[in-house]
Figure 1 (cartoon, rainbow, N blue to C red):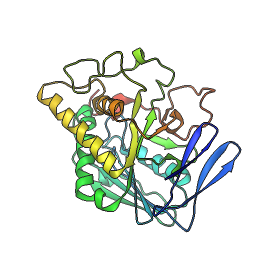
Figure 2: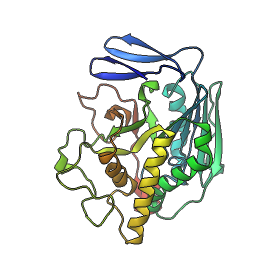
Figure 3: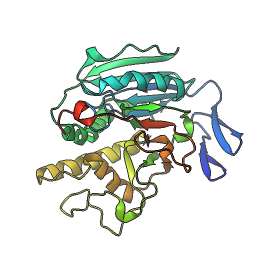
Length: 309
């Protein structure tokens, strides 16, 4: 892989046998431009990441590439989160990997409630029914298990890259191939200006998600992570094992899978770190530091949409 830099941003440029990208400069930004007619994108949507319902923040995506094809998997939502799916899909059509072929797979326990959305040529949607739960924390904790299982059964044979995003969110600006990397994470929008002692890591030593007070680089958003399929598989497998060990010991990490994600990324650094513009929160006032909001979590009433609060 070749890497080109402009300003303080690094953009990957694929060399050799991978999908080819032309990198063009505009102002002080580098934008990747697909060359040779590909890579084409398939996007898959799913409940909160190709899992059952969304826990505290809906589905995420998987971006996969194989033989010149880019695919994305997204997660739909539970009975209450399906309401966000239309905006998610319609804004994704405008901003996410535009001009790629995309297939959305929506995983939900309410398939009849999935809205009909007009998709561009080359973009498709499939709905897969999954079990629900009466406790959002359980949904959240099961994400890693479901992702790991899906990679084992299907994704490892079909994709190279995987991204995950929450369905209770919307796209606002271009999100392209500049976001790809071996292991990708995003800085949490509420903690990018915080000091280490303010991070809401799991602080109980009894939990496998434990991070000591004198350790930690960033606080990563649990609503966005991705990368090569094999790297995401390893991440989900480790986090799943830790979640299950905690469960056996009757411990639930402070922020479920987000706590375990932060623990994993502390000792397995992401190869690409996205700024909060890729994972903003609409409850947060816009700041001068973040010039463009590309994707954000929408404002909602958790008491109304979660099975329990």
